[in-house]
Image (cartoon, rainbow, N blue to C red; front, side, top):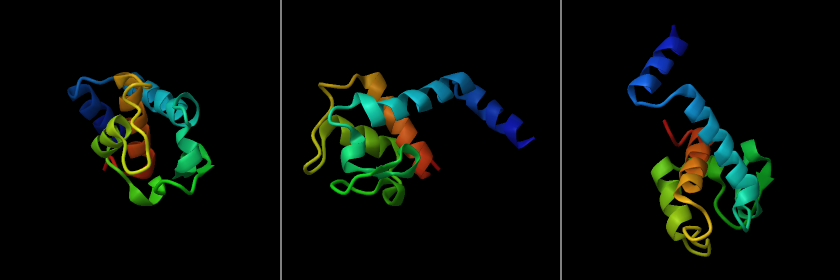
Length: 106
């Protein structure tokens, strides 16, 4: 019953479960491999198996998708902006991934 309600809500938003899963997987790939330097170097994120000590611990921070998009696009403090090295699709995917695994999307 609960799964049906979630899938129904996703359908109403115009997204398919497959789209959400692919954004999640793509976001994890951006976080762990595609961003240069890798997000894992600076950030702790349990789902990615990273224990960076330069940037904030994302598991504790629990950023929203909007916060991640803004930080990745424009940079924050010593964190560089990735708007010239990552596409909008990659930025949105990594934001979706981080917000989802940290609980920031709730």
